[in-house]
Image 1 (cartoon, rainbow, N blue to C red):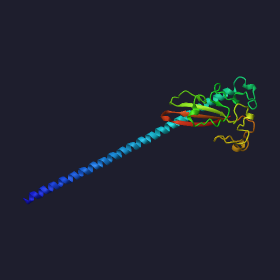
Image 2: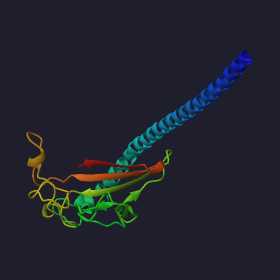
Image 3: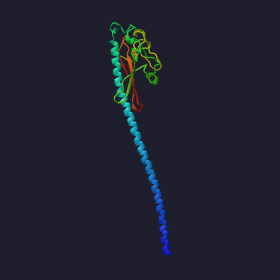
Image 4: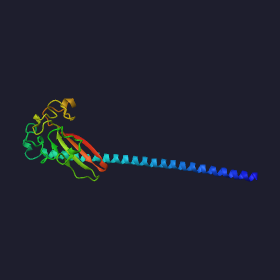
Length: 216
C-alpha cells in the first residue's frame, strides 16, 4: 500500500510540474509575439521614413523645371517688343522694372517683405506661376523677384542690390556688393540687379520642397 501511495503522490507531483511548464511556455510565447510585433513596426517605420525621404528628394529634383521656366520667362521679358530701345537702368517703363501679375505672372519688381515665401497663402494663383503636374506627381510653382526694395521704378531709383546700404526687410536683407563680393570681377553700382527665383514643389505624401536660385 505504501508503494502505491508513493506512486500516486509522485504522479500528482509530476502533473503539477507540467502545468507550471505550460504557463511559462505561454508567457514566453506572448513575449516573443510582442517582440515580433515591435520588430514589424520598426521595419514599417523605417520603410515609411525612407519613402518620405524619396518623395522629398523627388520634389527637390523637380524644382529644376521651375527654375528653367522662370529663366525662360525672364529672357522673354528682356526680348519683348519695345524693350530693346529702353535702358533698364533708368527707364521705369521697361517690363523688368514693373510688377504686372496679369501680363507677367509671378514676376515682382521688388523684394516685398509682406510676401512671405513660406506661407501657403503666398502661393496662390495671383502671385506665382504654376506648371503642369510632372510624371512624378509633383506640382511646381515659382515666384520671380527683382532684388530691389522699391517696386515699379527704374533700377537706379529702386534701392536695388547694387545701390544703397543694406536694410533688413522682415528677414530679407538686400546687401551691397562689397558685403558679398571681393576682388576683381565684382559688380559695380548701376548694374542690373540680381533676380531671385523661388520654387515651391508639392508632391505626394504632402512632400514640400523650396529651392532658390539667383540669376542676372
